[in-house]
Length: 425
Image 1 (tube, rainbow, N blue to C red):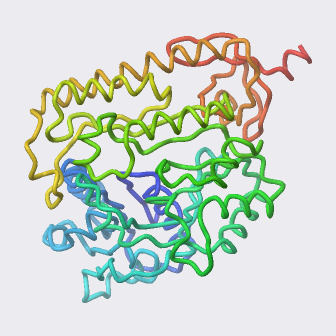
Image 2 (cartoon, helix red, strand yellow):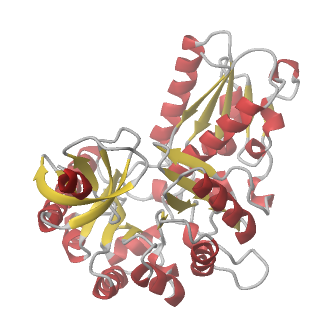
């Protein structure tokens, strides 16, 4: 194995932090044994089980390496991981921002370095970038969450919401554009809560506006999952009116039933979600809608679930992340009446089928259109501005944006023909 290996579980933010951590470790003078870093997830009990499984596998595959556990599961229950014989050290989410905590492990006496995450006041400025096929870069602008959704343990793993000032964010994006990145994705635990902890009246819309103005060479800017209730007029106008802001909004919806939303302690209603999508698409018809939806939340009956299925069509959801509810110890939802596991799985399958049907109709509507595709490194596929995945008929040079005519949809995949290639053919 290489001197440092990272294993990531969970969210895109974890992936971003793992990539930044691996880069920092590679550049640091690190004598002694090789190190495997497990960046853990605590979102469900199943995620914790998978983390423990990854630890055992890492030790089995690399018996002479240090095995270090960090991330949300390590933050929430450090003693459990410290008790595992395979684990060399446990590093908290705040501590993983300091590369020194991962160095010199052979000489450490203190094998658990986990502080009170609720006392953390600032985002880590150097854990900011992750890369997708070296074409898109994910830039972390926010961390933590001040909300208390009843199914979620993440605030106790990530701490309070805190934002990275616009200056360092813009400088990082400029550097990434200079390196050849064509698209930046702003990410965080609750990215639409960006700003209130900073001096002045900062918010996500203002940050986006500043980035677009300060980095005119950036072709494409995209947001990760957003909370619709925090899309203010400025952000709405940018999403619907700025050509370099991608026509793609991924909403954290979680359910299409109002009673379930209240029991989740979500801040929006079904009507608000549908109305928001309608306003977005009225202003910019090409906007594609994605959503996170949980299947089988406690107390969800057939009627409540039917409301979630119906919302897929009513909110025109074509990019779906469907999660089977899994109780997380320590959350209020875990103490509510649970839906039987087999029903949860069946509902997950039905929701995914509803999304597939909606996406297929959307794909059919795109045939004959011209899409601008950011081609991945392989030169064989990429993402359009609306985040549709497009497979190219002929290989082209990667890491560039090319105009493509959509000619077919096969097995759920859009097929595109490079307009430039056809003109030169």
